[in-house]
Length: 113
Length: 113
Image (tube, rainbow over all chains, first blue to last red; front, side):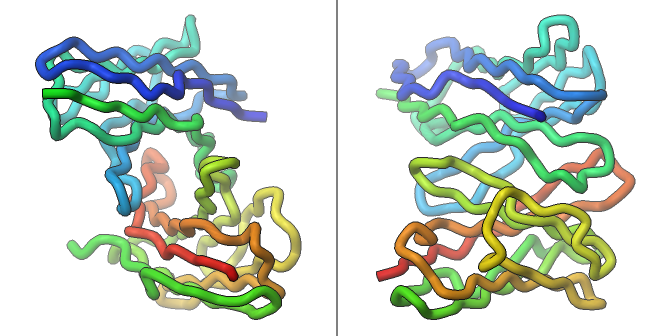
């Protein structure tokens, strides 16, 4: 079956530091890949996505590239802010969507001023 | 467009009772998926509905059920509640035939006493 592995943290960084959160996956076929973010007490917000190999998703300064050869989708940001503190989830879904999203366990990111 | 809405936002029940949660998808979205989020198990797929038909179900007991109406609104029901059912229940909607991106509601937080 499908699976997603990501570093769980917590990851603590200083403001303006460079961020990388690693995500690797196992899946049959050619899934779509996503990063979602969850703030305390809220649901999941879509951060970015990529639907095929070598696609780069980007949003709000965050980027991730769909690497089929390494089955990875690492999240990066050049300069983090305190407001980026949240839990980040890597996820995938197969074609057709009927099997639902498979999530990693989430990475708790803490940005200190 | 209005986002995914879920009602109620918070719920307290006692063991043995049953509960019904409601989800209204983004206008035009015909696929609705449900997820359970707990600190121990993370985010787990419950089931997915499209055109009033359940297309797939995750690894949950039969106490968990759902349905979808002709206007794409969906409900999920949990019967004979157990303490372990305490969780955040998230609903997501998507356009079938696109890139399967799912958009989440704010969730219903269920506490079973």
